[in-house]
Amino acid sequence: MAADVLQGAGADLSLSELGLGNYTPVGLIENILEFMHISVGLPWWGAIVAGTIIARCAVFPVIVKGQREAAKLNNVLPQMTKLTNRMNEAKQSGNKFEFSKAYSDLMMFQKKHNVNPVRGFLVPLVQAPVFISFFIALRKMAYLPVPSLQTGGLWWFTDLTAADPFYILPIAVTGTMFAILELGAESGIDNPNLRAMKTVFRVMPFIILPMTINFPTAVFTYWLTSNLFSLGQVALLRHPAVREKLHIPKRIAHPSSALPANEGFIDSVRKGWKNVQLAHQLEERERKIQRHLDNAAKGPLKQTFTHNPLQQSAPMSTSSGKKRPWEETIG
Image (cartoon, helix red, strand yellow):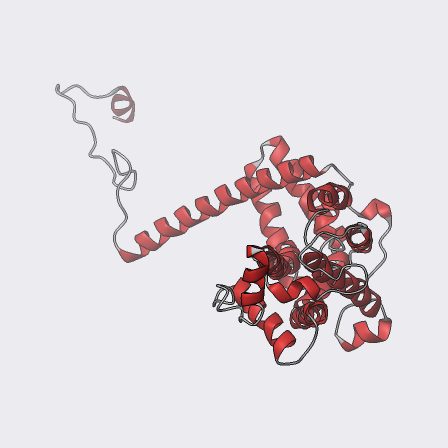
């Protein structure tokens, strides 16, 4: 009874009056959803769908950038593989000079072709905060709960604060997430630099399903909309005319022998970490050499030897008046 009175009292309250909708990223999402619901007049499920589409359109330029980087990296992958293999062989043999040369050649090659494997992480880094903000915002709104969410759903999930009674939304989200990871729809898994992680990502949807199956349907409404947007997006970005319009390079199909071996995720991470450590040591050594050269240019060189080899020492004098053997011979 008390709960019904509280819900009735809060039915007309705004999100700010309920303690939501502040100036954090989560609060911004809540304010956008409230605007869609109150000002635009959409039901809550429609506000969530519309807000999701707006957010995904806002990050679309980042997706296009990720596609460009993935295509460029794919097209020069055989050459980069050779340079990386040279670097790894030098590291295993302990030849620091050869490793330094191979590392420098690799950096010059990447600069010349304007590619950088690190840029492959750009899309996940941008998308993750958006997903987390939506997720937290909708959970807070559902668990408070915002009273009108309890009748703001659709079809069999009219109560957006409750779990899906038939588990249709969780299963649909798992299926679409698996399809996204297989297709590389976000250009993250499609990036050659991240292919070693694909096996790990394949099992993620099935691990996440039992952990999230009882989440509010408001969360799954966002999640499913976002996944469907991704699938539509990959279909769009695979069209040749669209790729040409967005200046995404054509992907070159390389023979499997020219591509890096498909090693395990752990081995890939371990090898990458060792290469980063060696590269850091080389950069630190180069900085020290440059610092010594800069100091030498500013002032006189410091003497680091006991006797200066450029100065001739005075001839040794003999204590007696006897001639040396060679002097007797000359005399």
